[in-house]
Image: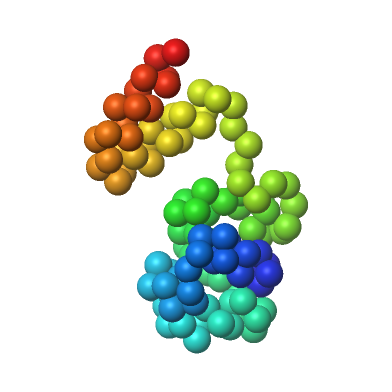
Length: 101
């Protein structure tokens, strides 16, 4: 899991201290996660998967794709939900058009 945690962080373009803020831990804890010295707690796994759209099976076991595979409608629905959480009105309007097609 340690390499997958680092891959998520690097793909997101953030530093260890930034991931620490997201997970509400110290930067040294993130260092421990990435070096395999400490496992993530289930709530931290859930948070990483939700924020970065990660397939939990991939994060925990290294199997399956890194990101969930969705059909077009599922992807638009996911993106619409994410835009709603963020309060991004412009993105929601654009996605509404996509959902109606």
